[in-house]
Length: 152
Length: 107
Image (cartoon, rainbow over all chains, first blue to last red; front, top):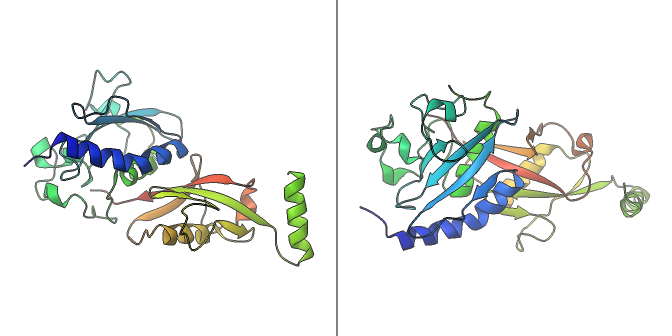
């Protein structure tokens, strides 16, 4: 099952109305300049309290039926998904091991064959539901602030 | 401190009230201020003895963050505010922008 890119783009654009000011207020750079039906990705630069930067790509294909695939890249987006690009404290797969990340599911190589993609709005153990792009950004921001540095 | 604020605080003192501080709180569901959202039942204007925890609770109520299993923390820049401290201890200027962070679980 998939979602028409126009439908995903509409949902993403609607949610960015909250996510963009939230990111700006939190001091996070959000780049949605390439966002369109042909490219449903946007990017956020997070940082920990020591000022180490982490570059995250949100690939929102099939959103909002399925969650975004969140991956850490290097600054130029030419490398991705390796431990040295991840903040320490995240799952060593490596991945952001939350229901809101498609990479956490087995179909994307993640550890969770016990989760169903369509249930991505449900709570991840130890917390409540994280249901929107702005809430995802908030959750990641808080965890990355506390990160001691790079994973590898 | 501006002359206007000083005068405002003096006026409060004259009435036997504590000085107040006006905040802005950016949440993942929108900005809470003296004007937004339009239908808010409360505004982020507080006596300076108010604890940070009360601001968190009010921001959650305004935007209906009812998920009690999440963690809610107010941030000023990268610094997390202690919920038990009074606002006075942070010496906020008027209209200081705070961020309500919402943190879920971990698998």
